[in-house]
Image (cartoon, rainbow, N blue to C red; front, side, top):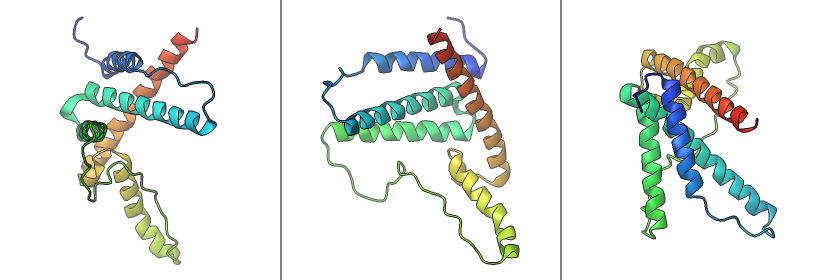
Length: 170
């Protein structure tokens, strides 16, 4: 296969290869008498695997040129190492590692509209830092550039996945 130059093509090849590996590793289906909660848990597990595969494929397609892709690959690698340790039966280390926990954004009512207006730019920047992988450690200028590229790549990801679904459903 000749080398590909576009992010879209690299993502599509990587995503399809990863999906094939995921399909080959799939466990046999459970019995039909399973409860709805276990079915929902299984569906959520498939969703998380699909999301991880899509994120890893996109970050790999971009490579190490972008801070968000490096941060995403580091996060995925770290999560896989934790899962391997847990599956191997090793004792998990305790501590403040909450990298997998989602944090909700809380907007407080400051009372005065003037104060809220001055703080809204800072609050929006903080929200953006949490949305872009690796954004916590970037200055504002870098954050905006990385955000623009990340959005472009997410758009490509959606288009490729939509094309795959359209192709498979015809």
